Image (cartoon, rainbow, N blue to C red; front, top):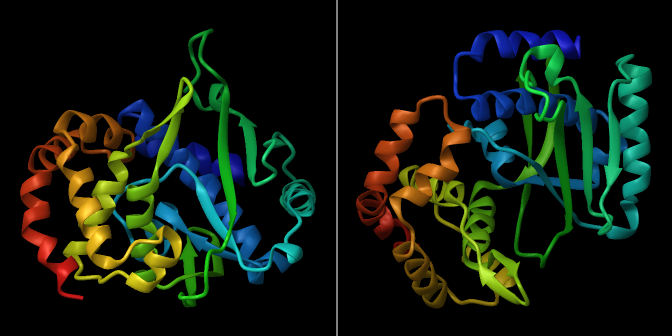
Length: 278
């Protein structure tokens, strides 16, 4: 069934940008992961968050690479047990064993690898990887100024419940990501940008969503005025070329990506008053 679902997704999108097609296939696998979690003991031990949560639960119109979860009670979450249960679900429950798992050294990131791209026709060159993988990231929940809700989802052959943050809390998490993303360059930490974060920012603003400022302060230590000021500084550094390059793998329509990137700053000025109204 899993391979059939992947083949259907590939046939429906094989004429699209190859990077987009890979993410479409990842989305199929994400649904399998979410179905497993929703029907397992882990459903009450993790909180769904991040871009994939926005797409699955709120119809965010872009694809997302990874699955992100927060853990409220770390003592109740043993990542190796989670991996064991996931493996059993695929091998016994789904009768599918053409995959492997890898736990990162931080013991908070799980990779589930499926060596199937050649079967689908996506790894045709000798130098291309045959592996399609799903990454699951787990982090400890920060603070207490948040609320969770249950989303009831029916996607393809799956119907499941998944616990997630409320949308104001998800907006706070997105702003926090924009303000705090860093990466090591040489021996120094440098600020890091992801174009998808800025697309999501405008998506929230267009919907009139107000962030949970108390939640944002718990995560970043910043009051509202400072956070908005820092956000403005980040936005001023964003260029259309950067946005376009980062967003192309997440949209089938490259023309839309180009238009969005070219109009990003104008769109933000249109909606920025939403941030100050809360």
